[in-house]
Amino acid sequence: MAHAPDGAHAPETASVPGMAHAPGPVAAVEPVTVPEPDSVTGQSLAPEPDSVTGQGPAPEPDRTPVPDQAAGPLPERRRRPAVLPALTPASDLASRRPGAGLREQLGETGPGALVRAATGALRRHKDVDPRRGALAGERRVGAELRRLTRHGWRVLHSVPLPDGTEIGHLLIGPGGVFAVSTEHHPGASVRIGDGTLRIDDGTPQPYELDGRAGAPRAREALEAYCAFDVPVRTVLVFTGVTALEVVATPPGTSVYRERQVSALAPLRGGLTATQVERVYDVARNGEAWLDG
Image 1 (cartoon, rainbow, N blue to C red):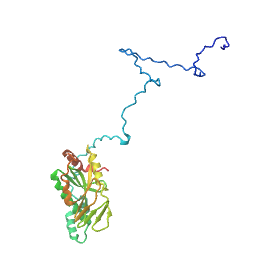
Image 2 (cartoon, rainbow, N blue to C red):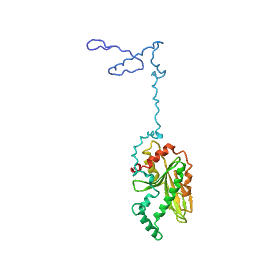
Image 3 (spheres, rainbow, N blue to C red):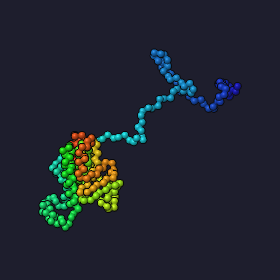
Image 4 (cartoon, one colour):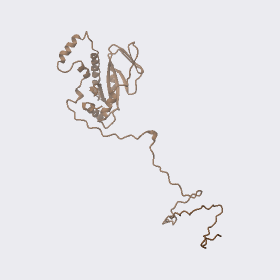
């Protein structure tokens, strides 16, 4: 046994076979907290160590449900509808007639309209303006849509949009909301294929049925002031044609001849009676269409 220089004996340490002694000071030992015994059983409440590792059981994993990222973000709550300005005689669209925009272009409104109409009738046989045919088509479709009002439907004509265009007719009823536009082709045979339109025996021309802005613009305007979804579908009506062949249409789009518009009358399940009136009250107010 070695002796310290001052003659004091160094403390002896127990030697454990198979264990090497690390040099340096010994780390401080953490105090061990002994759990209180159970007041009934007298047993310790500490968890029993694992028989293999000697460690206590692993903590229970967090079982809080995690949203499925693949399913996309959670739906947002619908915001409170905007406040619609009060309806005034100037903003009420219920009195607009079919083809109002065309009538203004042709000078059939305002002072001197009767004189201009008479003068136009005298020269109509010399100069046929295609806008007059289009106006005739709008009037015929408007008359067919008015027949649906006896079945609980509401209809507006020539709904003006901020860019200067119009939604020809807006049909609102138990079957939903339809943005109706008109194509006037007197005496023609029309065939609508996959993205094409052929008049008589002519060459098919590119023609997009679902590229019209009326339906999405109407939905945007109506849902801004309604507390419920207002899907709007597209209806295209051909007037004056002798035949109409429709090969295929995109979802949410229908194509009719003018006399076939009555097929919309029995549709149900789109809106309740209360919703029909709310949508109509919003749609007839010109202030609802000014934004966008």
